[in-house]
Length: 191
Ligand SMILES: C[S@@+](CC[C@H](N)C(=O)[O-])C[C@H]1O[C@@H](n2cnc3c(N)ncnc32)[C@H](O)[C@@H]1O
Image (cartoon, rainbow, N blue to C red; front, side):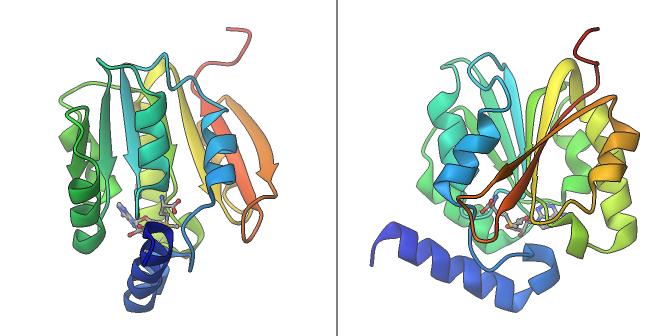
């Protein structure tokens, strides 16, 4: 079985076990991952953080774009998926953390992310958890950092606009379903 098919089956199994936590039946397409990462400066980042890494579609592309001396901290709450990521990417720049994104600060040693990649299924998460995670995102970002958020609906757009002075939006049509991409900054572009 090829890797893509194997990943789709693993993802589907994770969804069947925990639909609200996984929030999608398929991993994000490569095209949507590229569209998403093109909205931020991954090659210029010292620290990249990933929330909800899944089977690693963003993880692999972030590692391919990252500098040799940069670091990627990838959080994934599902132990099976976290193990898959650890086994798949033998890269000293990557730290896989099996924990909830709401505990992100505990894993950053006081550092802030230059790029934060987030594929959490906000619309299906329990509202209290969604609020805690969303409100922690600006604090996790460096002053000139950017949070790249992928969603399957525009529902959290107003919440992102409340939390971030600058939010750019794009739609990636090469995904099932089409994906809403948000690039959120704590500084306005003219600042
Ligand atoms: C929609 S999937 C995205 C997976 C992958 N990044 C992609 O784009 O294909 C959401 C992922 O977030 C993970 N997740 C859900 N809640 C989480 C939480 N509180 N903390 C960390 N990961 C979480 C799920 O287990 C799942 O792997």
